[in-house]
Amino acid sequence: MSIINAFTEQAYRGNPAAVCFFSDEKESSWMQIVAKEINLPTTAFIGFLNGEYHLRLFTPSTEIPICGHGTLASSFFLWEKGFVDKDKSITFHTKSGAYE
Image 1 (cartoon, rainbow, N blue to C red):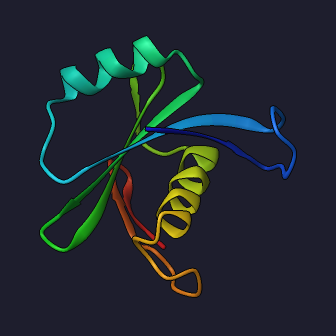
Image 2 (cartoon, one colour; image 1 turned 90 degrees about the vertical axis):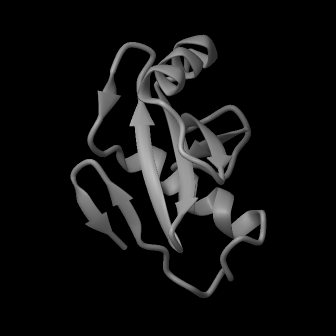
């Protein structure tokens, strides 16, 4: 799990999002408990399933279909951790559709 501040280059500024990466499916109820415990505006769960990146986004109280800073934080995480080359785009499959 990483905490990433989107929309800034300064520490402790911008919009924070927690990003969790997993390689197997997780239950929605488990993700909601984790998001509540982390207690940031958004907790993003990235799953690499069947060769695709799936993105689920949670506030401390509910799942949301899409979130700008959660998606940006997730992309940054994948690029910085070396899962995706920095010059490559990422397509996320979310509750509201696929986004690149």
